[in-house]
Image: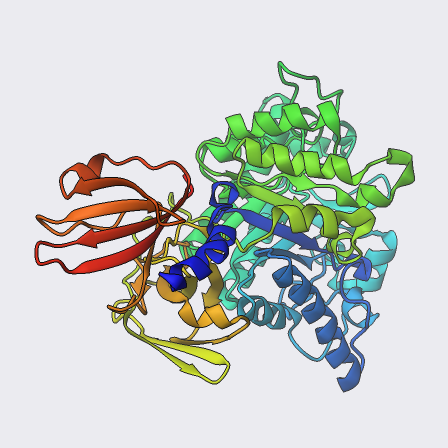
Length: 554
């Protein structure tokens, strides 16, 4: 009994926050490479500078892991140039300081490996329609899209763009995404600027419209052009690797709503993005609407996305860069209200633009908001509309304590789904472990069939451990409970009462040991306990007793 009393405070601090816990929540950050805004600051020109460039990225990924993020949106296509070796477009200037120069390693492959080591998903962020200003196009020379495929490009307001109305544009952009998906173990394709430019009403596409418009209203024709590109990229990505998530970041205001007017700046009418149709037609797995607004320009439009999600994910993008823009007068309280609103209305997570402002802790964004809302790990939800069949459970788990480490081992399932599996580790002082509780999540992605945990507190030795298989769609197997209470241990139950032996009785006491009630096996099913910590004793017909700590938090 003394052991139970010692643990009561630990158990309460471990388990009483479960009501607010969110295990399935997308927590994303955009890492911008254009101009080295987030990464890289160091240009790759030698072995030493390559090492420092890699270390820069690792520091950012370590930060995101430490702050319990789970998704990285890494900009891999900038303005008709890329950060990986491609047969379609040249290297971006940001990697070496020189357009077209090879940085001496594959930055995308490196980023994928480092993200997966840390349990982070990585999505390839692709800027779609813009292909550069005059300087960028000139530096790219004969390798620029403007030179190689002039029939696809239009100059508008001093910048070059692909023409969405030319059917070959969809083929060209799809070839870029197919190259990435087929060559890399990427978790997602993220489409940015998949729209007409600002003031798109004046976009110089009269010749294309005359050729392909077929008398359709020009605004609807333009929306159809963008939708056609999205549809093709989605279909061809899924044909290669159906587990790769396809998303986009449309303008935050979809259209005017009954709640509030968009004041002439919205996705549907201004830049011809019919993003809610993409959700309805199932050609997006998730949307990251750029909700870079405050107050009534934020909340009504977030609800509009949520009410028109058609079973897919809505992850509002929050404009934390405004925290350092004095003319906009953003405060950290506004960002915290937005996160609270997102959670209260059951949206699927948040994304932050951009990573530098998280790293800098601008206006306390990390120390105030992130630490408050991300106080435990979370995972990307399973993509049930693509695949809902769980993988096979690991088997034959074992645990050993060696010095200051706990070593877990298990056998990989014989049957493995296409795309492979990885493992998640759960631990708790409660048994059996509730894997629906994010506070029990210890490691979100383990790629081998063993795991070593460094003991931080003496009571870590009394933890229970479980492992699940996870497929690439995010489905979890049932848990393999690696260790269980011994006969002479006081056992712990979370939000449930222990089984009562047939013909036996159960006595429920408060934490001080005072008897509250007594039940037999049949009556036990009707017991409803309020939240709290209880001591429970079961006795079978032979007089054998077992003791439990029961923690009720629901």
